[in-house]
Image (cartoon, rainbow, N blue to C red; front, side, top):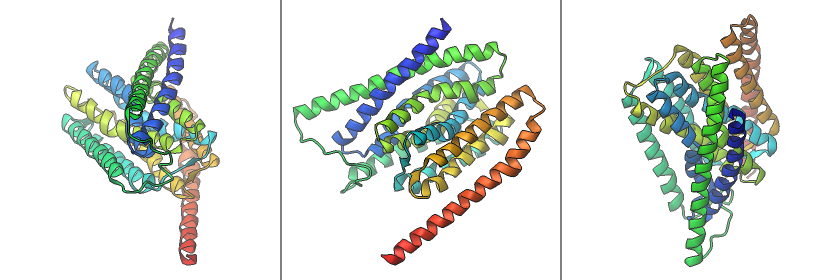
Amino acid sequence: MIVLQFIAGLVFLMVGGEALVRGASRIAASLRITPLVIGLTVVAYGTGAPEVAVSVKAVISAQADIAVGNIIGSNIINILLILGLAAIILPITVSNKIIQLDIPVLIITSFVALWMGMDGTFSRGDGLILFGVLLIYTFYLIYNSRTKKTFDTEEYTEEVSPPGNRKVITLLIDIGLIAGGIAILVTGAGWLVDSAVIFATYLGISELVIGLTIVSVGTSLPELVTAMVASFRGESNIAIGNIVGSCLFNLLGVLGLTGIFAPGGISVAPAVVYFDIPVMIAAAVACMPVFFTGGIISRWEAAVFLIYYAAYTLFLILAEAQHEALTTFSATMLYFVLPITAITLFILTLQEIRKRQRNRKEK
């Protein structure tokens, strides 16, 4: 029965992802909102619904580690795993707006989450602040997109149909696709997570690790499927907007709502503050040079993201099992792999800056 539930969850996620991307890409033209903003808001918040449901349910059930692990783990998965897989399929073109606004907002928000968790609790006040910022950010995105006199052809290419009854009917159909896609995604993710948690509990894995891995992977499957479908369909703006928007929604919306609904706030384990949140911040910061260099996420950059996600997961497994290889693995990552990666990204960034300076002089 559990196996059938797991398979059914996967099927629902595939169907829901296709419906959500199709409806979102078409509604962007109907409402004259760029696909990037649709990806950052409607698609991202819709695919983030499983995180809300799981995290709120977890804190009400006094399972704070699952709630926090789900939120932080989902962001790490969104950037390192989902973005990596999507760009492996087809290199993703990154809009300048993502580089100039959304990634900096994500980095700042990640540091704010770290600061809020330093005292060991995400309080109800913290939740209200985070959710308030989400409302402001969403209003700004929609207002800015709607008031632009011209649309960037990189973001908006589909011809807008003339007004009329046919346009209204088409719009309603597209809204129905989005709503239906979200409902199917949430249902599928719920089945998948429930079955996965049963397996993990049977194996004796801690709640924090369950939240950081199995639960966060399960609740991130809507983002994964949506990004993969968008990548296959050539909808780069929806793919990248969904991933970045989902990360912001996790921190501002999911963590905010979870903090608001938690009776006494959310307790935060020291391991989350001193390891998992810094890994999440590092992943967000790594996006800047990767996105900046050439404006395209290449396949080799995507492969690096996937390798780091595999290394992070392996670390969690070794730490959970208290394996003797943990010390050697940690030292190798800290003193060899991470410095080489940082130096490479720094050199690529310098090369890109010099290239842009030469192009300006030639103009």
